[in-house]
Amino acid sequence: MAATIIDGKAVAQRVRAEVADEVAKLDEKPGLATILVGDDPASQVYVGGKQRATAEVGIEGFDHRPPADVSQEDLTALIEQLNSDPAVSGILLQLPVPDHLDEARLTTLIAPEKDVDGLTPTSAGLLAGGKPGLRPCTPSGVIVLLDEAGVDVEGAEAVIVGRSNLVGKPLAHLLLERNATVTVCHSRTRDLGDVCRRADILVAAVGVPRLVQGDWVKPGAAVIDVGINRLDEGLVGDVDFEPAAERAAAITPVPGGVGPMTIAMLLRNTLTAAAIQHDPSAPRG
Ligand code: NAP
Image 1 (spheres, rainbow, N blue to C red):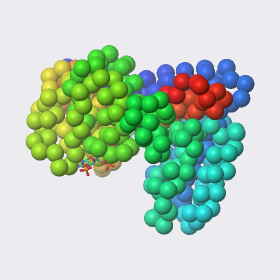
Image 2: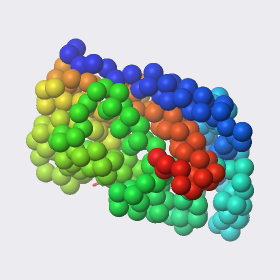
Image 3: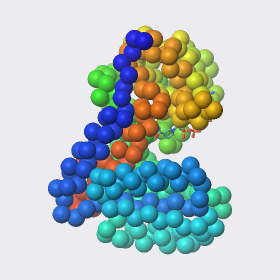
């Protein structure tokens, strides 16, 4: 195998340790409120992990678990209460929410300065406009991993497969901010392999196991696999790892690549949110 394996677990651990050091210096501890509606098992695992990580770095956790049949009005009231609670620096509404709830409206209610997931229309608009703001966690984690791997982003040809609001689109803006030349692919892209072969930086955020073939990787490229696919054989990414690693200069594994970065960046965002609320002129992200 030729590629350097980018160790997301180690990088995430370092980011978490940095956040813990910063939190220890504060007189008032930041607080992270999570809202998990209902009892979806996967969401319970995600929120449990976020709350554990929060406690580990000294951030105060507020764990709200309304029942699956909670009304839009009651959830609205909860978000508004958290918006005005000075002990709460960041608010995370775990998605998806049950079908009877209006997810977009609920997300919009979160105060932008507490939007640690970076998914409200205000945060998305600030990012698209190149203005400071809280950035979505997974794409921010991708940028940190590229920096850690020593990848020269400026002027690089970056190809992202996937255009979701959660990963692909915000990552395109973050890479543009760093002066990459960005192409975003999706399910209607023609000749996907040919487009990927142009990439100095190739990011897969699709949700299709091993979609990105080894021979789609330009020799010497950096390959970041955001995909998490649960198969009988275990977790696999969106990149066919072994053949891709033969050609790439650097590649993230699944698991142990992008995944651990998401929670680490959530903790960092919570620290940033607390700083903004303390001093509105503090750097945002
Ligand atoms: P999503 O909302 O389902 O979006 C998937 C994107 O992939 C869409 O833009 C879709 O195109 C595109 N796509 C689907 N099939 C394709 C194909 N055959 N060829 C080219 N493009 C195709 O997914 P997501 O939320 O962005 O998540 C993507 C993956 O990342 C999932 O495996 C998810 O579990 C993982 N993920 C991981 C983390 C983490 O912390 N590591 C965080 C978030 C997500 P259209 O727009 O045309 O439909």
